[in-house]
Amino acid sequence: MEATVEIEEKAKQSIVLPMVLAGSMFFILGCITWLNGAITPFLQQMLELSPLQASFIISSFYIAVTIAGIPSAMLIKKVGYKNGMAIGCVIMALSALLYIPAAKMQMIEIFLFSQLLIGVGQTVLQTAVNPYVVKMGSEKSAAVRVCIMGLLNKFAGVIVPIIFAAVVVAGVADGNAQLSQAQKDAMANSLIAPYLAIAGLIFVFALFAKFSPLPDLVFEEESSSSKGEVREALSHPHLVLGVIGIALYVAVEVIAADTIGSYALAIGIADYSMMTSYTMACMLLGYAIGIALIPRYMSQQSALVMSGIAGIVTVLAVVLGSNESFVLSNILLVPFGGPELPDPLVCIALLGFANAMVWPAIWPLALAGLGRLTGTASGLLIMGIAGGALGPLLIGLGNVAGLGAQGAYALMIPSYLFILFYAVKGHKMRSWK
Image (spheres, one colour):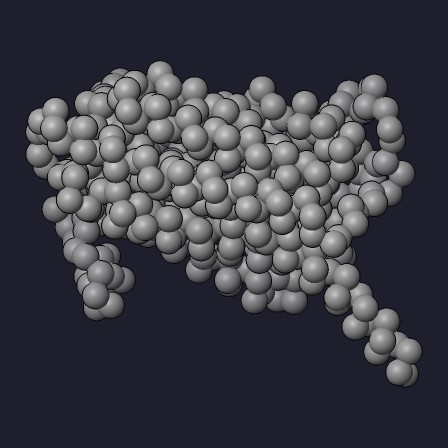
């Protein structure tokens, strides 16, 4: 009996320490990723960008995944998961420093290049840390571990826009004002110190990943050669459909989190840079519920079904809601000291709740039974993050095409329909016949 207890304690310890390492990586990923939602409307106002032009700020960050997905998987296979985390952090830290000359010169081109490079670093880190989390324990509880990582990631998404608004936006930006050049210069200069701090913080995380006393996880029958592995991995329908599902999920997640600030700016909300925090808070709530319910009361598949349905219903509420109605905020925000916001804006934030369980549910379902192909499959799934480049562009194009800032959100519905399909049938497919 004592021996059994000792074995269980050692098993818990062997998971806890890797979880601390992975958790720190997910936190820094959250800081970088969800800063996009705050800085996009800020740059849109400072540089006087159209909604379509502003969407490129977000898209350039996510398009890097298309470039770096498979190379990242090859890199991780060569240097290991821990070293991959460290390399990803170093790339992001160096990229953050490029925001300083971009701000000084107020050039959108340098901002876009910086976003692209920091997206490359993020891809390397994602490729290393996601399979690390999925495979460090039981496959059945993988969604719970990813949920815990998601809590840290989304917690960063809650606090970063608030900090950005307090440190950068306060006193230099007004959502309703036409800016003078002096005000634009003040906005640009306010970015310098924060991005120096961000670069320093990420570099500290790189050192932690490199020198933490944890061995790399060993995946079953990992092959030293990548020749033919991509083709073999793509022969598994549940993986291919999972990659598509991840791409469409990231598209709607990025729309909900990173375009909410631009929508708020368009309808004259002064605190536009804080809106991402509301979406992330809703995601935190969704993750917390997921941790409580999966797998004891709800399967990963059931959670994915509910996410697809909730997404469709909430998008319809965004499109059909009135900007003159404040019913939802009077119920959900005002009683707790929050602001009075239009119903469509609150519904965009509520999409965070609908999205919360999609990523942690798709990952283990897509990687199920892949064994030695896990590393390559993870690289393919990470490439799905490129869907984040599509989402904001769709909203921008929909706006230009005449759907308007509000009606453009209807373009999210096909993504939720596919997620629902994957939950019901796609993840079970083991043959294309």
